[in-house]
Image (cartoon, rainbow, N blue to C red; front, side):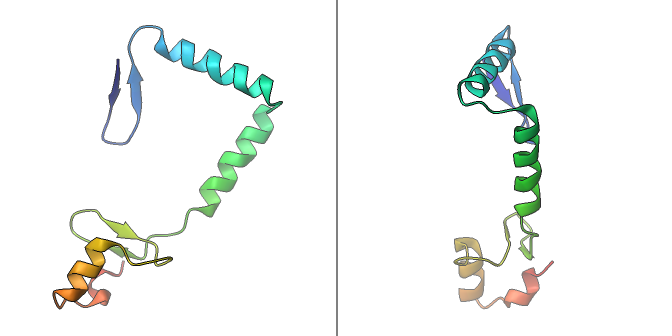
Length: 87
């Protein structure tokens, strides 16, 4: 059984963690993925994450790219200024 924490991390019961690691290593070998390549990919993903520009009191956020999220559309429709949510 796995349990999800508030930060999104998972805890695994028994040997599930070891089985998951073995599965990941097998897939890395199968596709010739090195630890260096994996590390570089993770760093690139972190760098690609855009900064949050708008946030509400409930923790909803938007980076300002793409369509406005529903929570922001509803707030604007209700008369709230978009600048109120700017970080």
